[in-house]
Image (cartoon, rainbow, N blue to C red; front, side, top):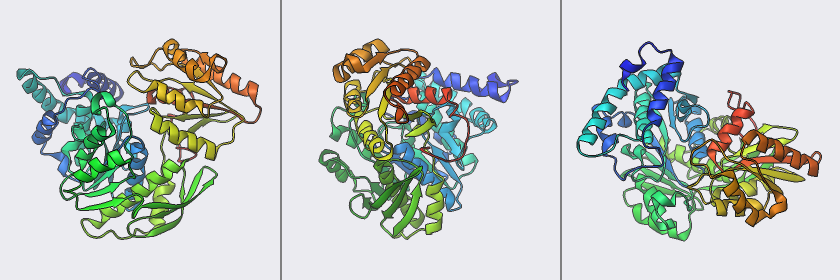
Amino acid sequence: MTDLTIGGLSPEDAEKAIYQHILSRNPEHDFEPTLDRVREVCDLLGNPQFAFKVVHLTGTNGKTSTARMVESLVRALGLRTGLFTSPHLTSVRERIQIDGEPITRAAFVQVWQDVAPLIELVDARSAANGGPRMSFFEVLTVLAYAAFADAPVDVAVIEVGMGGTWDATNVADATVAVIGPVAMDHERWLGSSLADIAAEKAGIIKPGCDLILAEQSPAAADVIDAAVGPARVVHREGGDIEVMERQVGVGGQMLTLRSPAAVYEGIFLPLFGAHQARNASLALAAVEALMADGGESSSLDPNVVEQGFGQVTSPGRLEIVRTSPTVIVDAAHNPHGVDALADAIEESFTFEHLAGVVGILEDKDADGILAGLEGFLDSVVITQSASPRAIPADELGEIAVRHFGEDRVIVEPNLPSAIDAAVQRSESEADMGAGVLVVGSITLVAETRILFGADRPRTPGVGR
């Protein structure tokens, strides 16, 4: 598809046509260990990925929330920002944000018109050598870098799609690299051990960058430490990065954070959970390093920090989409994420009966996820999202019965019916303390948010 094929279409129809074309390519979870195609297109575009400073983030869980915190802090400092995250919940334009808002439809169409002929050229060259077309994620990465250079932005906050070394985003050179906690996930593509996965994620460390490193298991820490050589400075959680104090409050938590440069007290974060507090500490250290520009980290204006964190949103992460009864959606999709979710639910909510609506994709550890959920869900309704990779509800239900027992499991493949069943089950067991948690895959969360109208824009608030 070139710009000629969208000529005459309305902007809305053009966006749909572009997205359908990109979807026709290899999916984002199916990638090859090469950056050649992305580099080639970027070379033809004049290397837009070098037109701005980059904060590059990887890790197993928390990347998107941490990226959103970094972006919000940088924007509060008065700089123009780009934010590239994945996956999206409702519109593909959510993945490419400028100054905190999804790229406009007109800008999305325009950047496609600029880039599409070069993508076609690289596709043809690859095919001539027996290779594949550029993948879904490779194309989106190029679009993001081109859009950020066109804006132009001062700082781009870039979340890897998967891994690090061979992730399409890694054609950029990080000013600051952030590695969150590394756990088992995406084993089919990243490796079967923590050491293998950590090695892939450490690939974002570039010569001269500052590294912000979350506390790691010994297996992951050894591998990352061995790769640190090219980094200029390393700031570590548990070393010069710490959540010193936090208090749960209405709509979030109050934090005292210690960074490499200062202690920040009385910082309100409108998100739930100890894991989000840790994400905030990493984000704060990353922005200090970014603003130091190669020098020693210096403190940020506390008022700016308060403003930046105060306006953070994280859709689909412990997000309340309905009250009476309370319905929460969370994108936890691996055992590590479920553990963090369990702690946050226990700390921030009081439910007499919490029913789960669970759907899981086939490449995930369904057994491990359900084992973790059993510890804090009173009952569960097994369903499936519209994704072709969703585990069929009947098959997933058999796994759920092994953990929950037959009496606590309902199987309902239709998502709206599954949510209704969970509401009825929870309300029949409790009165004011009834709750429903939709969890297990990002596609399931996305569909639930649409059902409840949470995909429509609204101001920052509880759990977002």
